Length: 296
Image 1 (cartoon, one colour):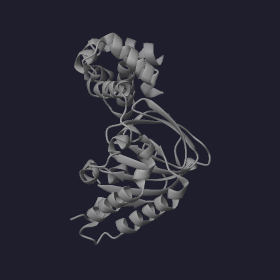
Image 2: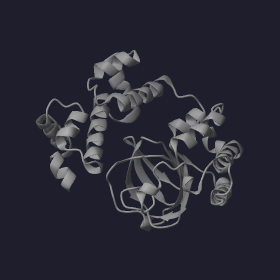
Image 3: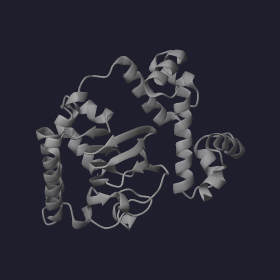
Image 4: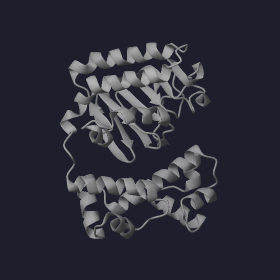
């Protein structure tokens, strides 16, 4: 039975370094559902460092321009739009316009998995996964506003023993009734080149700590290294080798900024042969030493 501590609603100022977390970050860890309303550009801190998400986030951007990267893929968008990011993904806020306005909900892995059990038969579900940012048609704006108002009201009723189910089914019903329309233009299955590129990036995301050579990924995907490199470059603008390097440097930056691990421990975590080798590799790609980057 969900208790009051399972649901968090807040309207205060955001904590620096965490998008969408309350001033006391411990309050959100392990919670199943949390809603934050009326975010403006002025409320968000000025930061450019990447961050790894601890929960699933869905952001309803009412207005303004925003630019961010999700797992190293850059998105430059104009509201109204929906941004979905999953637990474990790495986000980096790049820019916001002064008129940026948004609301968002934070959902635990458990909460989201229950939702996807109900909508996994939707034809455009793959489009949801492939498009973390999607435009919202003007005629659906009032519907999204009503959804957030409804979720706020439902989440405030902490005496309801079926509170989490009520929240989940509110979201599921909204998806079936309205939100699916946002993805209709993207329902077509991706072509073979797009599928190969997507599979490669997902594989690199899982294996970059231990697998640094293109030959490994080509073998896993059943293609030649030359074909893989050419396809990924054409689809993303970055070479396959560059993707491996970018994930590695991104993880190094996150570990340096958000953990107390020593440089030696980070070097070991990322499977570099020595701390010296890691330091030279990092400086070559970032321009400064790991220690300088951590302290900057």
